[in-house]
Image (tube, rainbow, N blue to C red; front, side):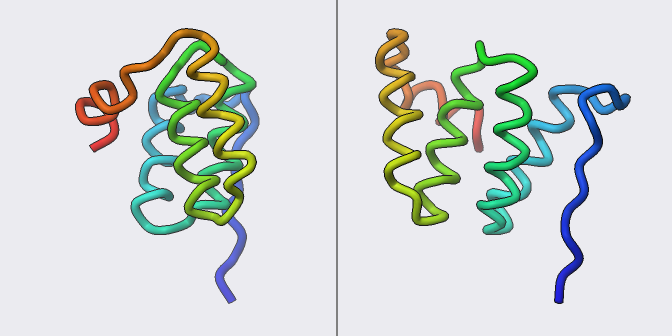
Length: 93
């Protein structure tokens, strides 16, 4: 059995960007639940990043939670962020 992934608290010295990169690595490895947990924590720190909202939708979709995925995509649309394909092709890969 794989040991659980342990995340540090927001008070730790890990930067937001570093934690974002760890979440992206989790997605690349197919660890969608771990990615969504980390991304949710990042969203609590700063909810202004459209990339985090998109990655949450992506992770939830691939984890089989399409309802949560749609909620995050709808939120992006409500705040006027409609260029997902442009943004993600530059930032996620």
